[in-house]
Image (cartoon, rainbow, N blue to C red; front, side, top):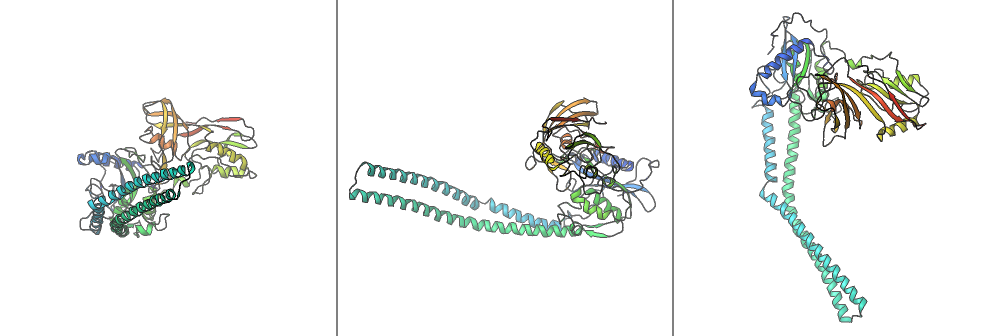
Length: 540
């Protein structure tokens, strides 16, 4: 299962520490290994249709007990209907083995599904449903017509009373007519109720049986999932094993999500530990077309996902000397803020790339903390809006609570105008236009955003190309909404520009920085009422 490099690697030094899987630059050995895996994939004609739909693959550079260096390869989930292929490491647990408990119980659950579908599609079920609908429509029509006739008769009786003096016989006839029409309405309503209740009772009996089957399906599915997760006993470098239920017990979701343990990274580490191979470096890449919701580019490297893999990998990496999370490095502890505009009520600072706008989970410097130290007398939340940590540019600061509220209202009403400059990897087809792709967070891979026409919030960006080469595009963005990662997703997504911003490790390829800069802010001063325009050109 271990593959040794086809080309000499003597000139490439081994990394000092193992890859931090959630923020990394692929090691040269990983790039060489990935190239060999990609060549292998390209030669598999039988898989072509499947991998062209897109799949995540991974490589793990390892060292044998004799000191030989090679690599392992893995894919996420299932490939070509199977989870075992000779070139790749096996799954942590083979849930597709024919005689295994998973396949047997899955077939039982599938049988319940077939029974539910058979009952819901039966002639009896369809006939009862249609009868109920027809009876309802027929009686609604008859009641409507009877009420209209009763109303017309009542108006005629009132007209006779106004225009003459009816004798006792006429009055008695009018009363009998009124009583008959009221009784007829009640008879219709009673008849409808009796027929509807009889049919509804028959349909309820069927639905009760269907709901019982659905409850059984849900119970058995949950039990199967729990039993399955118990089979995934993940190792770490110390030889300690924990199952998925234990690993996810301390997370917000408490239980493992579907597919946990089946991604490439856990498969690779598990195989290495079981076979006494020392992990050296790891990388994961996307191969094939981009999906319609996520942003994935053919051949690009991506960090491990947070929702499925973070709890697993935190355990599996114990015992390895792992690189530090680069987001924990306080690069701007001593950075003096570049103040572009200031008066007694507000200020605009030029936030450097890599600095937080407001304090986050990691204990690193933020613009908010710098302003709070410099202006201890300032009131309110100070920072009016936010820029991603990786984005540089103009950030608006309010020195009082009232000014903060006024400026935030301008953002909410979209009267503040913003301009960004970005450098894209690739050449766009159109020179200007508007991108409208609704966005929502990916709950299993925060802070990544996905395009979701049904549940996403509106996100609209105007853009204008400034200059292009054969491989890059310098572009101006004018966001008309302010969603998280809006410009990054609109640039990278296949239905947007399909050219990720250079240095975007979430949606594109990592570089020395994210080439995105907020270069202009135009707003109304909350105190003077004057329009303020602040600009700061990008340094790239």
